[in-house]
Image 1 (cartoon, rainbow, N blue to C red):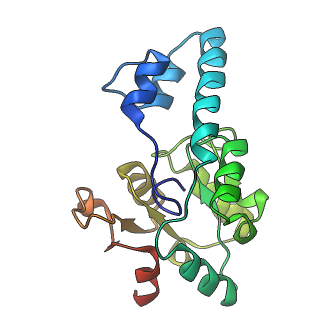
Image 2: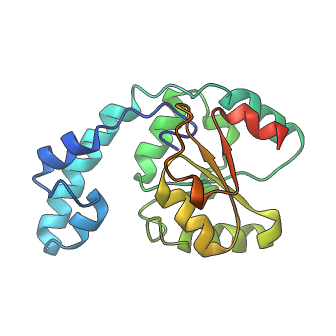
Length: 183
């Protein structure tokens, strides 16, 4: 969602510093290693940080065009995010994209094992009764692409800079979401 549907605003190093987490490990992995009491405290703090970011969400270029087109063609769409459910809704509201997504199809860290684990993809596919060959994941980071690879589905990598450092994990690479319509 963040960095894909919306312009990435997270400064993960600053968030890790604020939470007192190691700089060389992803946030959710670091939190999972804490005691249950510390996990609750740090998740509460993380949720507050992410809520402030969610309130400033802006859609990425080409997002509305792509989502409108997919909606017109009756494609089923969902979100698999490492964010919390509440902050996911706030992000979609802030970027004026909430109307494109059924809340039951928003799988977040409370509902699925976080990416790069493919658990959320498998859950969505089960809910939709979808086959692998008819399922695609679009993402801006290696965790998205690794999850797609692990699930055995096509991956589309979005990188507005055009640098594509994780291109080896993608079936397709695009600089904007509306470019997906050409694939």
